[in-house]
Length: 93
Image (tube, rainbow, N blue to C red; front, top):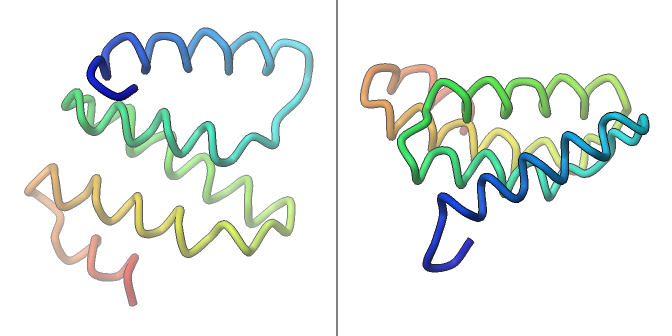
């Protein structure tokens, strides 16, 4: 995504959708990259929805090692939205 976040986000979306179609779901770092790219592009609602989805998936699958980073990313999205600072703070506490 360096230098061209729009193309990076589009490529990640296409790749992750293809992987999802074959039933593979555990690509947390790739989904994190997509969420961060969406934030850079100002696609806050999409980025937040994806972060929430990944948090739920990590909790369900017992992938607790990812939760601190997922919550940090969610907090960054919430802060970028400039509307929900209290919720962002909860993610970091």
